[in-house]
Length: 228
Length: 228
DNA sequence: TGTAGGCGGATTGTTGACAATCCTGGCTCG
DNA sequence: CGAGCCAGGATTGTCAACAATCCGCCTACA
Image (tube, rainbow over all chains, first blue to last red; front, side):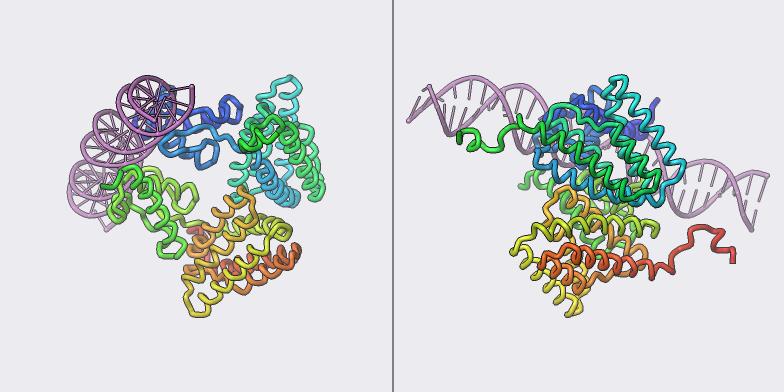
């Protein structure tokens, strides 16, 4: 006999995590409608639990909550790309400087092992797993830096990045284990300047992938469509 | 006959903003219990609306949500102070660099007028108003910088700062219009380095106020109390 | 034929009652 | 006399029915 309170407190988390994972794995396209009843049925949860999960996802900007019109997977405009990546460069540069000072040998070992696993995933052609590990690499770096406020913010930025990639290019952004390894090795040498440079370049690489493929985007105004 | 949906969608906002303002104005001490029924009565709202507001405040870390035990105004530990201020220095330095490049004459004028108003508030001894304007100064700067992602994060950091001040020192942190004016004048000259330096020093000044008065804090362990 | 207006179904928003949980105070028992 | 325990009351968590809203389509009319 499951206790309602505990069971359902987890029900909300279950729905939240399921949708979050689906977005990160690109299994839910931007604009997909998220109906409360349907989700409640699928997850065997009450509508209230689903509502709570959607509200949280909305606060993280992963779904767009339109009053009286339901929730859809967010469909960020390409105008957000520069802002997002500038924010990431700012924060992650700061993280690099912190880590170059404070990182422990154990953390270095853990990062190396992580990058190796990431590399193996890409090598065997498992892009989904590679992508997921690439995301978690940035989160791991953020946690190791040991600043809770920055880590919290990074979580938001990291989750939003793949969504933006999917909305713009229609496919997975390739993060790449090689870039990550260079960052880790710079940190291992406690070379703050090199770590910052490599992380910055890495982020610029990912961003460039997005804008380069940003051609087939929908025009913003009707005037632009018919001006030619 | 007020329409339930619209009236209550705003009811949640009303509760949210009222509590937010009360925290920023230091009218609610950390640890204060926020009972749902009581708040619902006070604001003439339903318990659901109050719940929604509390959930949002919880997500902003302004109230602590304890499962089955209700919500209280957050009581952050002093250990968070360095993290918070480091995050602010990182972000606001980036904002300064952006603004030194992009700020418009109109924005400069607006910032100058804002600082003048802030100064007048302090001059006439109205600390509450001065404090409120000091907070909004940082938010205004953040908005002018024009990066939505960073602005969003700044909002969280800015709201959390006075709470930390209250929890630690028991009184209002003095931000000071003079520091703000120097920042604005550096921006007016489009001197990025000077703007960054002044903002960084300003934040360091505020942080120093907090740690300097951090003596009468509760000891963390019983052992520490009785070791003497 | 094209457009304005308005039903019908589906979906979201809200409420109040009910269930579960926690805290408090007093009681019993060792 | 103190520790453990057990109601009683207060508070939070959950749910399912009801109300409000929106979208698509259909009709009527110019």
